[in-house]
Image (cartoon, rainbow, N blue to C red; front, top):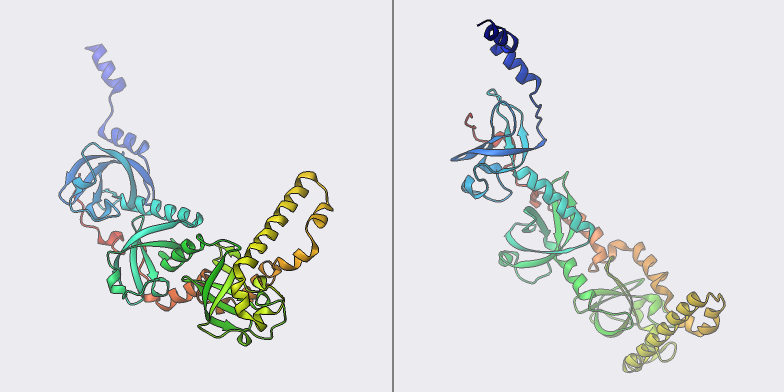
Length: 387
């Protein structure tokens, strides 16, 4: 008996001691934390989760997925262990509210930022339209396509259910905005089919003091004034009219910036033929383009030979100076600077995305829906059952 009393005295402790011990080793959970938890009870409209707190945490059905859930069993199984987001602090019963949907949204934003950084093209079906454009879902987030960036002749209402290729224009988690462009995706696809040195037939769609915009199969290219003819031209209006059909050669492609630079100067059999005898230029276009490509190839080979042999003067000897006049400097000097100077005047090139998209989006600000559904706030949560 004595030994038993001693043992009890040595190891025994009161309920207060036990509570104090629990408090000492209790983990502190804060809203925003991501913690592991195990499902131990599935309720009709939610589930109780053991995350190591004194009281079981609760996840309501609307917080179980980024997508619509009709029954908790669609997402969770008893005894399943997974990560949960702590949505709210303890209520009066000491119970935390959890979310899976918040984790999915965080990962979705991370994924779309990665896709934007890669300049990826994504596909998504239109599920609704509004006054300003169309709505799609990307990685579970709600995306908006402004009407000015939908490249189709169909009424917007008829796009519902249609799968579209899209490029990212704006990914802003802080402002809860995801804006995309159908037009830019189509332009990029068409540009990938074009080649420098290729002769194409196009239509003059616009004339500016610095050049003419040529529609070549739904893509707009710039024929800079310096690339119309070897002879001086005061204004492109003196050579072209809107809706004129023209033959041009592609001298530069910049898919990243959506720019296509064109030339008729490089197609002239003799300097000034675009002014004096345009039909002759068009008749000889393929022949002159072939010579241009040969000259470009010779120049590239000359540069390669110089690099391999490390002979500084070889380039000047292998590449005649006359050739230098035929290689369009406008690609590197005239076109970019001219285009940048009048950025806002380029309506149909992808480069115009930088100017047109923000203003287009702001013009329909009230129609740009949040990328994250607005029924997320915890104020809408149903009353959770106690453990």
